[in-house]
Image 1 (tube, rainbow, N blue to C red):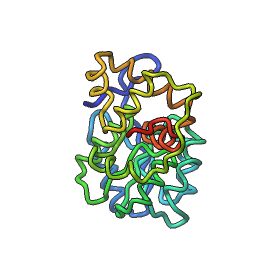
Image 2 (cartoon, helix red, strand yellow; image 1 turned 90 degrees about the horizontal axis):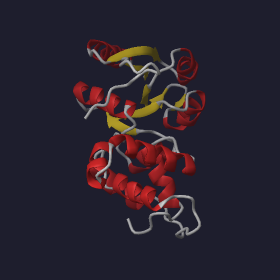
Image 3 (tube, rainbow, N blue to C red; image 1 turned 120 degrees about the vertical axis):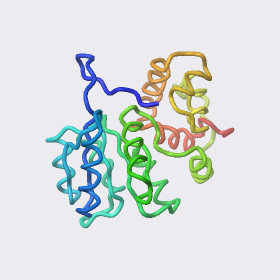
Image 4 (tube, helix red, strand yellow; image 1 turned 120 degrees about the horizontal axis):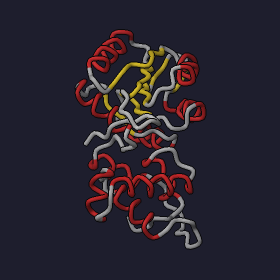
Length: 224
């Protein structure tokens, strides 16, 4: 379920979206759809990665819709630079390729998830809302397909993750939303968000998916 984006004053504000795509027709269509929604607004449109790096600073978006292939580089490879400029953003990669190596790279670079360009505009707005709420934009089926592709390290025993944080990570690996995790653990969604924020900080991750990939590489969840 969509969770309202709130300002520091506690009042609901539209989710600001930066569109990064060199296809003008698609970018214009996305902007029109986003601006027609009461809770979403287009913060800007970038047709190059250079423009994106500038606009992510000047327009202060909450979510970036990022094309995988840009005329001046690889959109996935640009995610760390965009996050360095605005760490709190959610990044949803728009891709015409479902190749596992592209999707894995997106996750490892801090993407909140990805969306095929063949998906409906309604699914795009749902993805934006999910990313703004800190959710993973990926189906449980696709996540299950990708998990075995992450390298597994030896299990760590002296890490800083608490037992509850490991439990939350395990549920993230099942593809559960924050609300579903809260229901499973019989706690509030706010508590789940706090656990995810804490474990992400400890792992140096910028998204739930990146936290999961790091934990798997470090052998923190060897039984998944």
